[in-house]
Image (cartoon, rainbow, N blue to C red; front, top):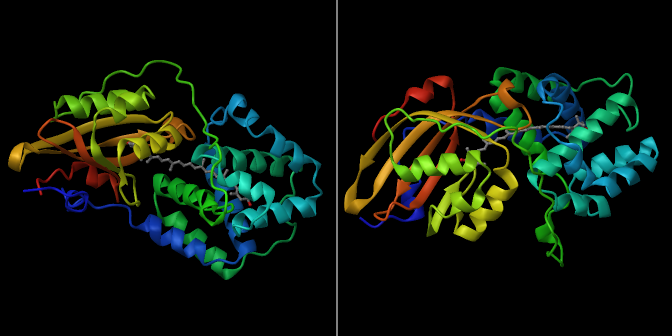
Length: 319
Ligand code: EQ3
């Protein structure tokens, strides 16, 4: 059998992913602009309490100093307009700069604005704001899902803000990426049921923020599929993705199964938890990695899934 990326996506196809995340994100997308900002404020005041205060890091925030100084000099009306521009993907200078922030830089940007909103430096939510029934419905939907799904919804909304660089005539700009210093080297995590060296090396490399070592494990035309996204194909694209999104994660795989399939290929499903530097040990996301390795033991495909429930951590059926 000759695998294609498309057919590889179907390995262990009975894995149940957290469909509530795209469903809730779609509900959010339908809100009007002020309702969107209000939703984010309420969601953040609930969830933000569990953000690890050290997460954004002074050195990282320095990368955005110019923009922060501009924002501090603005009137409250201008600041509110800026937030609206970002949420409507408007074409303004700050909205364009934001487009070239990596995911963690985008989160850090809003984290700083949120802190300043609390302190009154940035325009707060208007006093007497009345929640619309639409916002209430999205908040209720978010309250029903578990914390790891809630933070994923929050993250998705922030990532989609700012000017869309693909609409610009000039596309070349340096992406601002955050790095998160590790306080100590993480131990190796034994995976009950899996001893494949490629899989173990992948986890160890990611836990050491060694993107080069992780990417070297992929086949030239290999692919990585993040939660709720299409596969990212080829070493160069995977490197850029992991430099942006893979930093500072703590991966704690626990169990898995390995199986030889046709023509020397092997498939492996591993489950466990992943922590983001933003929430540290406060939120353990239930994750599955579905690997397809080629006959040379290189990663032809790996999907990372956010699981529907903790029960799914035990779903290691060979399919
Ligand atoms: C200021 C305020 C409150 C109001 C204003 O009106 C609007 C906004 C936007 C506001 C601010 C909102 C803020 C500060 C939101 C912050 C949200 C945060 C910090 C969310 C963080 C979420 C992080 C997540 C969900 C990370 C998940 C990572 C995963 C699952 C990574 C998995 C991977 C694995 C396991 C691999 O093997 C490699 C690939 C990959 C990276 C996919």
